[in-house]
Image (spheres, rainbow, N blue to C red):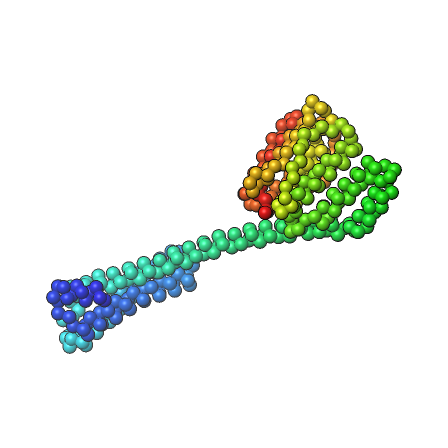
Length: 331
């Protein structure tokens, strides 16, 4: 409206307020009628071809009605005969003008449709992300439930009291066996109660691993493993039961009784990331039954906790097995 007033003023065209007001009312009416009718057709009619036909018929009807009513209004306002007002030139002018505002109504309707579809696409993506997050949460709950179920099947007090009794009875007679019983008690204590929300201290995990290796060495003197344990503050936390599972696999499937082919184990902290590395020759003669807690379990734990913020590299050759894992720690 301001634009047309400016053009009329600049061109020094006489401005008749009543006529201009009527023109603006009709322009707005065409715009809103086309916009509302197109939205209604799109919501009610589902067949594409029928929608296009109704668009054309409705648009033509709105334009014809607007022209007819506008001509009648002008005859009343200007007090002129209808034939004098309804000239071919004037009708063509009204038609071009109303088509312009009808196109604006169609454009606005399409813009709303595009915006609505973009919102639907965004909401769909948001729902997928929410479902994925909920699935991860449920997987964590399931894993924790499995651990709680395992723990609930063991009476910790009975277990530790029994191990303490065996330790006291064998300490004077078989001190080496008593020491193994004590280490076994520490291992079981860590496994049953050393974790909190899926995490445990790095010092506790390394002590667990050291005792586990020591028990195997007490059972068999011919174990050749190059491992130099490190000491770290007890404020550092790592995801629990991952490192020990890798070490257990090393003992379960590795060839450890050959001095010329020793296994290698390294666990080092670099900044805020812990690196586990192991290398061993395979023991082709050892047949062990899997307890289903292996690499698949470890990968799922790491993926649930860290997403893509970890690195797991495995080289499974015919005679050797090599594993390198790097993941962040908590301080």
